[in-house]
Image (cartoon, rainbow, N blue to C red; front, side, top):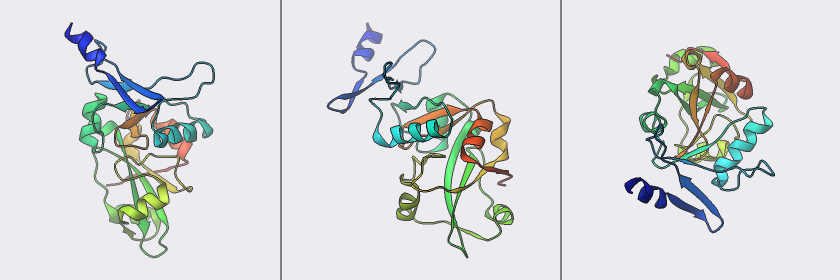
Length: 201
């Protein structure tokens, strides 16, 4: 009975014609909200626009992903790991920096367990790094901080990947909103983003 009530309460209306349903399976106790795919067209009809954009960008890059909209925030690596039921190290943090001299945007895909050593990364990049403000991040990526995905940005970005992410069979990355995520094999993500693998710490 309690489970039925939870299922009945599981609908969340994202718009008049778009519904995302919370799923409570015995093997899934994290309240993941899974969005349905139209079996005829293969297109997602009920994802938030930002998440749908990420899924389409992944498809164009040859990467098959399934975006999941969580019932809770995945804004931080710790929140994302709790929601996905994985280790913090399996969370991909998409962090935007900027070259101090060239002002060129640089995307770092970092394990949730690691902190970026800007001096170490600067040796790979060839210049010091600086952290841009939130407005710049949104302008360059097309997404707000907290939901920045590793691909699907407003313009192509020079991308570097934390070598530690390759230690996992799968990793989880943001899909355009603070609650949308997708899982992927790290090597496939590296290929799709044309990322250079480096040590970030």
